Length: 302
Image 1 (tube, rainbow, N blue to C red):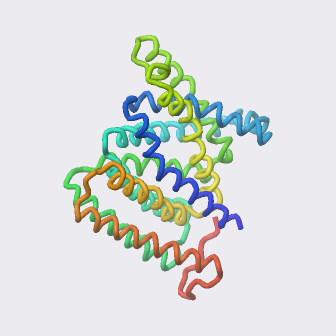
Image 2 (image 1 turned 180 degrees about the horizontal axis):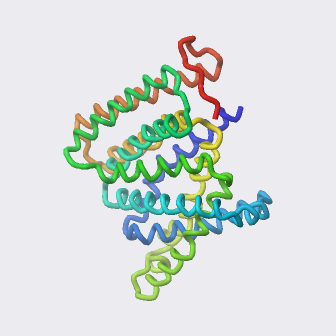
Image 3 (image 1 turned 45 degrees about the vertical axis):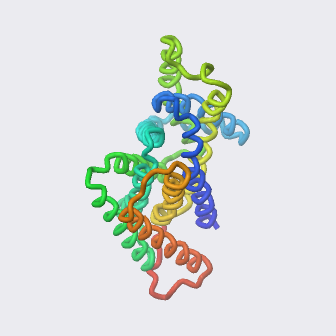
């Protein structure tokens, strides 16, 4: 049941992340660094309200008195900061397809992190799915003709974030609250400095932008909470392959909604990855129903 619930949480998180480019595009006129500042500031009250509603605030205060917990979540907060900035920069500079490549690379990295660090053992058809997806990613990378720094930076920062969060001491909401606590004060000072020198956007760009900036906390925290809950329940190999939901949606939004160009070569690479995701999904359903092929390798217990 825990694994099945983890998969549902993962689908929710990745589905929301896949649709978020539409939301960030509403604020395209706002510089990426200012959007990141608002994400950090507005996320903390949203998450703290959830902690209080769940009556977990005392447990949170007890946990953050341990230096190992503080050090762990300082690292995850730094990884999130780099990941958020790179992603917003890519979206609002018309590189949604480039960003989606990063999130296509990320599941492959996540699978390998699960294999090497947590000794997870993918089943036979999961290995086949992985090989197909790897082929698609390598094809896309070579087609680029240039070093895909946006994609690789997004992949590595979020891949290691997921690995650390899987074994971290705090749960999904508590951990995100601590990450946001580290981010809050620097971000608030930064936004106040922008306002003092007259370059701030909040309160000066119309009600639509003001509301969108204020809701960045909820838009940021909701999928992260679902992701952190999922990664503690599901195997990293499963999380890695389900992750393809998000970049597939981003890719489709980039070309169908915002008209970003896509070549025939890119379409071939993405198609290989979609076939891998379909194969993985069917195999997982059969396995959960107890109908997986007898050739499957039993999963490791983590």
